[in-house]
Image (tube, rainbow, N blue to C red; front, side, top):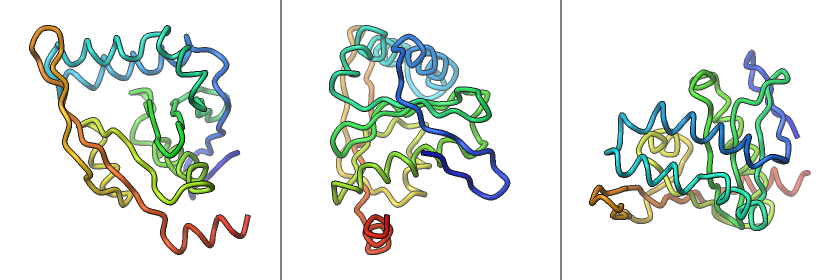
Length: 170
């Protein structure tokens, strides 16, 4: 499955065969981006949550994908039922449209069988989700071991008549 938007480079979606590669993408992104939004305890919580062991366990319950552009892995994202999980674009590949392309592909997969898509939205990603038509469902927070808080929103996007027509035509 591939997608192209105008002059942007096309990404290809490939099933993740390696939990280690997914972990590398996730950890590089968290370490570069999350300290600007979250306290140290929350960043450590994210890193632990996305350790290789947890990703290996997730491979049994989720469809985990890699986004590849011109032979280079640029991002990862997962689908679990009607939820997009673990969506991370490597810092050096951000702001090139890869995250949007990856979201298009993952949403398409979910809308094949569900009326809604859910995401646990980290602060750095909220603006993207809002632009894509997601709305806030709830505010959540988790207290980390050192007393810092990890705060996020659960967000939802509903299938539109256009989305349903596109799915029926495929």
